[in-house]
Image (cartoon, rainbow, N blue to C red; front, side, top):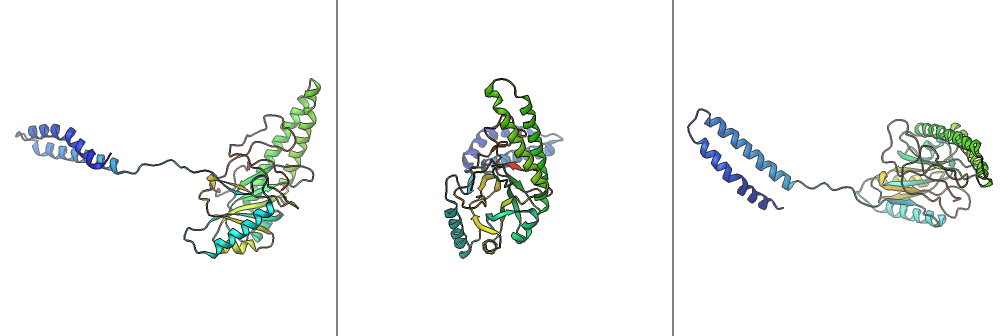
Amino acid sequence: MRVDDLLRRIDDKVVPPLGRVLDRLRRPTGHTGLLTAVSLVSVTAVLVTAVWVAQRPRESAPTGDVVRVGVTDGTSVPRYLAESRRELDELSAKASGDGDPYALVMFSAYLAPDRLPTVLDGAPVSEVFTRVPLPGMQTQIARMPVHRVPDDVVAGMLLFAERKEREAHDYQERATEVTGTPDEERLRPVYETAARVAIAEATAYRTHCSCVYAAVLRAAPPDLKRLAAQPGVRAVDPAPEVRTLDRAVFLPPLPDPHPTSSPTAAPPTPPADEPTAPPPAPTRSPEPAGPTADPPSAAPTEPAATGSPEPG
């Protein structure tokens, strides 16, 4: 409704009763001045409020699809890396007043937490991706929000180790409870293998393993260009389309040799605290979680699982 229409309706509804009130107030009493002032103030407040409500902009709910940055399932990793370098060159060549963009930084090898400050050259980091590279095992990818490097990464690894120890205990209990038909007995080795994988992951994280393979940060395009030339950096994929991390999913390829595709990321859903069903193979852990919005100021919260990788 337009403001002039609203004021016209207010005139029709408010002015006649107000006229009768003012007519009574004109009658001589000892309180005429006070009552007149109070009435005028009240009417003025009603009119001002009505106009403010009519002119106030409506608040809209946040909209927009989740932005995906990285390699989708089945995409050639070498082609993706080449495209990332081209986009970084184009972004660095043009001046932009849109502020510092987010970027996905991929490492050429799995790094220990204490290597990150040197490789990232002190750039402010929002989150890191980790995975324990165990031979012959497909282990879980973790996405850890960070603020201080390497302290928050170490703290996140310890939290994830505790989670893996709980998972291993749960799998071991399920293995001992399996009894019955031959089909049910086939679950026992599945549970036992899953427990061994979880224990191996917990042990690696407790020793601050070389498990970090990517990071998300925000920096000016020239700084991103210099970062891409750092030893240990495989590529930098700028993502100016990302406005907030809670509306973004990052899919960095693993630093394994001869990559052909990236890990497949599951949709952003809250992670389960404990496994609730037998895994089809010892390659799955609790369901993945969506992108973390803001890094904490202290130690990171429990890392969110983002699925199990495939060779990439």
